[in-house]
Image (tube, rainbow, N blue to C red):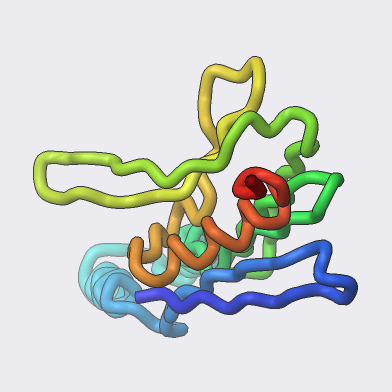
Amino acid sequence: MSELTCRVLPGAHAREYTCHAHVPWMSHLDVVYAAIACLLYVGVMPRPFLYWPGAICIWLWLKSRIVIQESILAMKDVGIQVRTVYWGGRTVSRFIDRRKIHDIVINEGITMWQIKSYMAIIVKNQEHMIVVFEHLLPRLRPTLLEAYAGTRAIIFPHAFDD
């Protein structure tokens, strides 16, 4: 499960919602991978010391693809930054200019086994939406609704003024 934290930046013109994954250092898959490596070391390989660097590189590559944190930073009159942080510290960010944002929505994806709610940004003149918290997919209540309401309040401040 993941948890959401909100940080209101000085001046109340920006908010950052961060979703943290609870990823242990060693997972069940790591234990299985280590067991297979040990079995190969003991029985099959003629010179096992030649294969250990490769096995370690594969393990590190697999670990580096694990997402540990995703965030959305909404800045009034500027835009939105969507950021993903991976296990090794690698960060991927994407910025969407405020003038290009058509809408922010909560949508549902339906598969054979489950229904997942997700938050997405609809960008003008683009075919695909940008999914926020794409890898961690937090629950609708209260996580997504809180991030959705706060982000819309910053990006579209006059949407509900009447």
